[in-house]
Image (cartoon, rainbow, N blue to C red):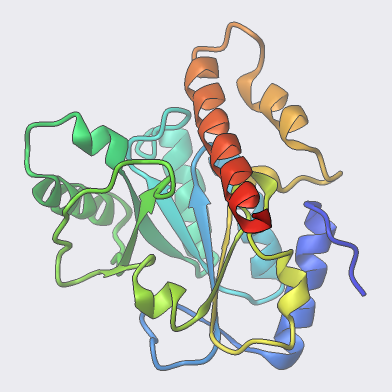
Length: 243
């Protein structure tokens, strides 16, 4: 029985156990009953690289979703480009993470914006992107978006209804830690956010202090607001479930 937490050791142990009875696949193979492993890089590329290294050492491949308009990193800066290229060299794939809150502020057609930004990301990293996902879909207003025919939506029924879908949003597994599903399900999509995983199982407040780097950090307001949105969302969801 594995001890559920958000440490790197628990993540590594769980992947090892999954590999005993399952295979890992990706969003291009919809007929497979394997496990799709996905990561949304909302805040830290450094945290993503650590997870990518753990997976690489276990010969596990996954998909890393780049948030094009991230508040805390620029995917096209020299340092960020270097990290993302390392992730690609490990054999992982890139996904495109679009921000609905950002698109709502624009007068341009959001479908056109997504298509253009996809092309920029593909060209910059010399790779193909076959899958996209919305950022914070539970708390942001939805948009009528027509995705390019070359990509699939990670939140479509194909990947969240026909497969078992698990997410660790704000260190809250929606239906229990993914280590509890090692033998019970074929065909799953597991979403993790690398920022929540640390060497010594830090909690959200401890991670936030590290991420912000001080009370005067320019990202503090945006990140606090994002945490509050999800905190309210999960509290309301739990209340509804208990009712």
